[in-house]
Image (cartoon, rainbow, N blue to C red):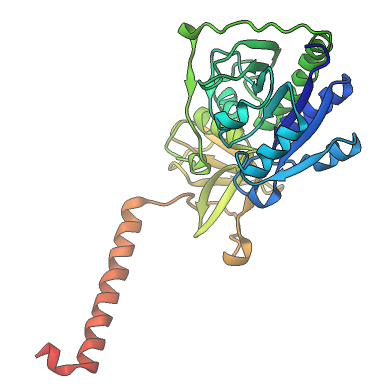
Length: 340
């Protein structure tokens, strides 16, 4: 299989970086499939692949559904030996996976077989463990096929998701520069994974970024870093507004203490100190979401972040009771006989 024909499908930064690595190493890329912008709303770190494909003179097709008939027809016409599916949230069905003559190549940024599954960058940050740019032969199971190349990268204890992503992209470059020349020369050998050592990470959603201020500062700090860019961000609430926190620092020594979730101090730069369940957090970068629909609050000492469930339930019960009284009064006014 010297100089195999390759088709690449993707939707994020790692997809672009892989395409660029294939081109840089002279791979025979016959077509590129890119997720359409209309379907990008739920994709963290979305990137459109049309421009890098066009710059290299490679045929390109937008898709909304990777398993659609027009996608199948395009891939069939491009006649690949290998289909690279990099950074796709959609599941590729067996019909499409069966088109390439040799197989389909996937990517995962962990030390497979450990860390299979969803949201790998966030889990790497939360765990504070190194990752690995891993290209593998796809099979019926999730992230379980033979490993084709694996290149380590760092995920340090203070890294944000963007730092880990940058390290991952550098590792993708190194992995492809090491592997693609061998692949073009006809070398094709995958190392089977040890399934007994496999671990799995579950799905994470934007709602998992909700900050619970009664948790320890160390835990909140890790979650802020894991949910930060390119992810949707960790968030809390302040005076009825949703506040996304992008960067923060745990404070181990301070002359303050207070109720969990309360702002204890605001410095001249607008950074504010918050009490947690154990320790303090200095919030350094934040943004009010949907400012047009929410009067932007003035950050000041003494404000409480988040909602108190019992207080909110009581407030809502009072609102409901008031509405019930109004409905009863309206019924009496409109149809007096129904109340007699």
